[in-house]
Length: 413
Image 1 (cartoon, rainbow, N blue to C red):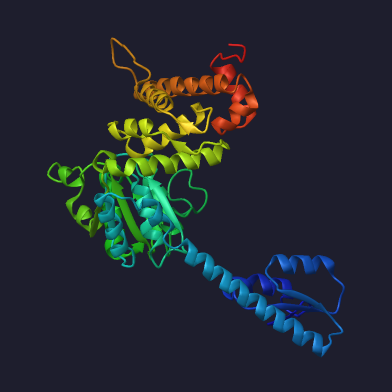
Image 2: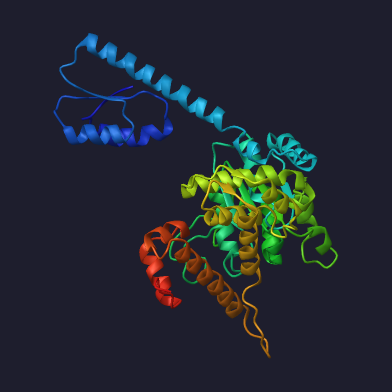
């Protein structure tokens, strides 16, 4: 397209703004009779392929058109190549020697190309979200959004507005229109983690959305069609709650059009050596450590461990072992030390009380104890170097200084 900069009605820049989203792959050359540097910069930032000033030579124009078309063709080929390389990346992260994971990967491949709603079950830390992302990545929706929502983290009084959105005036404080997670996932996949935590009223509305494939935000009298693939996950069997009416049977059967059960790490011990080395490599690369292997004794200890926290716990142990290791091989002592730290973090703090106390206070005390221990360990490991400790903890130095004051820690100690 040859698009003039100065035109009656709307000018070339306004036209380009409207045109580029509608025709993203069309080469566009801007034409002008003026030497307008600012307009050229703006047009290029909006997606124009070239900017040509009059008087225009026919030969020059033919060359520029040919170059613009070739440039677009190469970009399309590059995008296609990137998409092809991206295919299967999540599956490759899940592929492991055990028969249990081979079954999971096979199920994912079979359901990915369909539009079925998928229910993923498994213990906490088994990688249910990774499975959901792999299903999305292997589907025809891979170029559209993947929106993950932790249903257990949303307060009950706002969960409906967060999922379905709301219009201005829908309730006190709704001073503007806000799209929900369903609308944000339009054309892609919405992943509802720990879906069993949804309150009964929200379950009813979710069932209606799934059945009718229509979305009606809070405060709206109109529904709009919805094109979203739904994947849900739970760490407890929802069927067990059906007789007690904790989870609606009709919603359960809608969500479980296709089910994938992710095994615990105890059920796939043969995968532990491979996963341990992978997590070690990731942590060593991130922390810039020259660690290259895990000793056989350390692997044996990892395989023998109970892993109540599953893959998430294994990943944390290997990251901690990388921090502890000062050589190039993670030894048994590093693994034992890391396991002990993770176990202490899980159990801390032990509170002895004579009367019930609010759960929020228990949670805050536990988090504070764990955070204080982690900061103290990082300061010891870095010999009091706050900048290095901040990098290990993945916070900025200002935040670390604030935490040191809060917990009464001093680099001299």
